Length: 582
Image 1 (cartoon, rainbow, N blue to C red):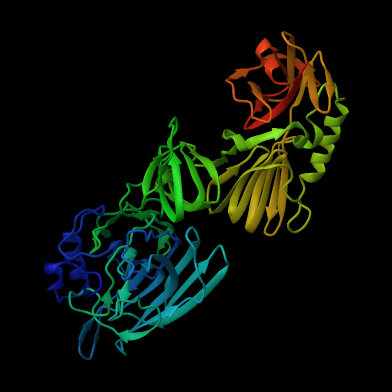
Image 2 (image 1 turned 180 degrees about the horizontal axis):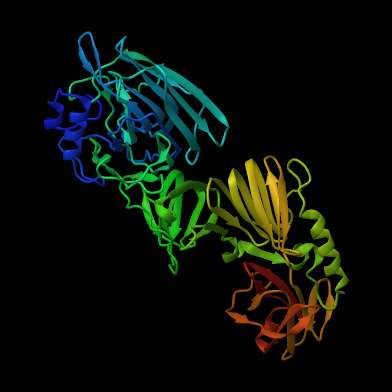
């Protein structure tokens, strides 16, 4: 396939001015990215009015190379350009300046390259210039293209790495226009993407022009554009001023763009746009990720891109996944999550998304009494003084103390990495971390939740000993302790951490804690408690903390074995209560 963006046979034959060519293009295009004329390659919005500047935030979208032939280069450009017409020796040109990133597959591997494409109409050249820094899925890139006198100024900045690059080129013409979205990836004669160097400038809107374009697009996560401004004005949909094109590439993947709203739109492939508080788009980044719908009973493998229900549980233990969600006013956000298992829930009114670590639902989330709450969980009649001491200790631990401190404590249950910006929050048993623009780590333990900030800043809400907020900066960490319940069995004696019970006896299990606990029936030690969950009954308060109790019976069949384990499920944790039958 040759040429750049191809208008189709009718538009390609036009040799009139840029405005007339664009008008013909818009006639062939639908107003919302629907079917276009033959040969159209691109999924983008384009403006007809004279443009002085374009600025926006662009999130790097993962490409899935699992079904791309190893010997092929398949991909696309993602970003925006200013373009115009110019007359030089040899005829009419369509010079353009582009800034954004290329995403493509080769040998089964994805690649992401940030850079510029700069035209020189008088020299009839197009120069490819790399930005000099990398990007990863989920990274936000801030982009600007500005006309400044006889020059075009281009800039791009990675908000995650704080790396930036600038470039400039000569004026493109008299009435510069703009286009933004997902565009064909230019390539040399061998098919390798053009990432640096200079080639002859030809008419981009041509069936026969060069440089050649790679077949594409490759399967990709939705490409999110936000804070989009044209000549200082926030972009909204206006049929008379902008038009859209859909892409039916040579790979058979259809791409289109959603309507701009509040300065935002997305370019999407095989999945539909996500719906606020109802669905989210999930695309594999690397490895294998699974998901389970709310109320489901088995996990399914995420394919090239799936739309999954809000409230789904996502398992990225052996992979990475990029999630794209809809926000109010037509905006979108995207983030990458990996190395963990979590439930993702988005609020239907605010759009806030919470990833709750899901380790409490499996057997590995069992916490022995001695491991939980820093001593706040007791057996028999251990004085409440222990709990008070634990609260004082927790207050001291809630403050970050230098780089990498404090460390995670207690038995590790589950964890999750995230690279996201916007309204994302990760939640554990001891606290929740709201992103202020960062890459961060969350880990649940039997004693609480550990947060570590790799980039930028987190705002952590700590639940215990009282609800408060701590801002954690890059390179620092925070441990948010659980409010561990006090558990006791009576009337019994204890030996070596075990309650001594007798056959056919009735005993009271008491829990002092802020939320209603559940009793889990006995299993022979060292097996985990495995019976049904029975809610404990409210039984007043102790020092302002609710008290709960239940009566259980030591039946004769328990005498077959001496040591048994019963359980107390409190929130996402299961505490083991050890019994010795006499």
